[in-house]
Amino acid sequence: MDRREFLSAIGGTAVVAWMPEIALAQRVAAGYSNLLILVELKGGNDGLNTVVPYADSEYYNLRPRIAIARDQVLQLDGRSGLHPALQPLMALWQNRELAIVQSVGYPGANLSHFRSIEIWDTASKSSEYLSEGWLTRAFASSPVPKSYAADGIVVGSSEMGPLAGGGTRALALISTEQFLRQARLASPEGSARNPALKHILKVEQDVAQAAFSLNANYAFRAEFPNHQFGNALKTAAQVIASKAGVAVVKVSHNGFDTHSGQQGVHQRLLKELAEGLVSMRAAMQEIGRWDSTLMLTYAEFGRRPKENQSGGTDHGTASAHFVLGGRVRGGIYGMPPALTRLDGNGNLPFAVDFRDLYATALERWWGINPSVALNGKFTPVELLKA
Image 1 (cartoon, rainbow, N blue to C red):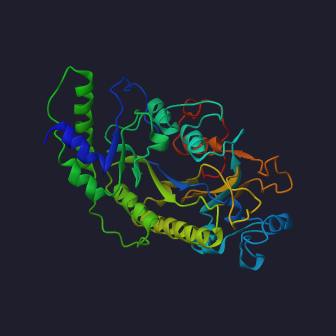
Image 2: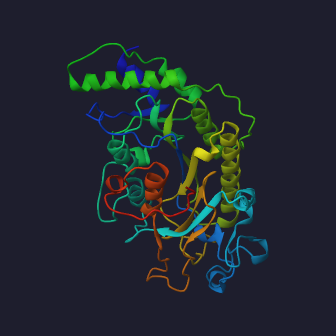
Image 3: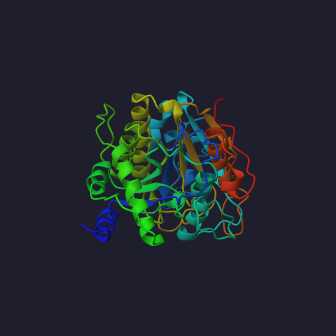
């Protein structure tokens, strides 16, 4: 098999973007023994029906058909509660391992799926266009140890998201088994003066290194739910259990663009989300990684507070997100949704910039300076234990 056939074959299973060989030896590696798991709620999750402001009468005025009834809400405090489908998360809440950050957004919010997720992935201002993901810049400034199998793994999608830009040793894969079968086709021997061919040879060498380090042999006692999100998390857990070393894993949970018939669809999506997160917690506890794991949800935007005529919600702005882990300081952070202060388009103001959450991961979790990766100074949310 020639190299073109190899790259074509592996492309269906793993997309690889490896860092060029540049002078990084002098830089000190960050605390990448701490694992970050990013969970993208693809399509834009409805934060108001996820973390329900049940004590605010305006919530029920804006949503006469799709609001979650007060007697069904899983109460967190005297003002907010979870959608009943998130019942599995209550054990984490009671154990103070779940933080909820409300009113997360950014200035000048864009309501296009494509553009807004690009803003989140690149940690850019709404008015600027960047080609590199925020993690790509972070790893360029503070490299992941070369002994690690990869800097990052993206499961179930070929979209590199925060790892985009060609500056990381990053893999996108469907399953570890498929990747390992395809990686055997790599031929890492040889050298070349031609820059393009040299890059291909380097890709093959690094794929072979990752394949040597990764395996899918760990038999978890923890059970993963049998749906798309559960399967993606199972693959992610196999990567982590291989002990090959990886700084970040990203998984996606699809289907949150709920313009119509939201109630049933959203209930299913949130049930799958809760089941998946709880199973991942059990898996990380099983291999002794829960205290060194930080899970963070994100999405391109929230939904509009007022329901539409199709029993759904349209693209909105600020939303609520979850942060989970053994060293998370559980509780509610940010500000409650300001339902009486909607903008001219009927959307919510934000209180926490999403880059503040990224700064939390970079500075508080990995111990690296977030300013380079985020192109500015942002304030970490103090939701991690020392």
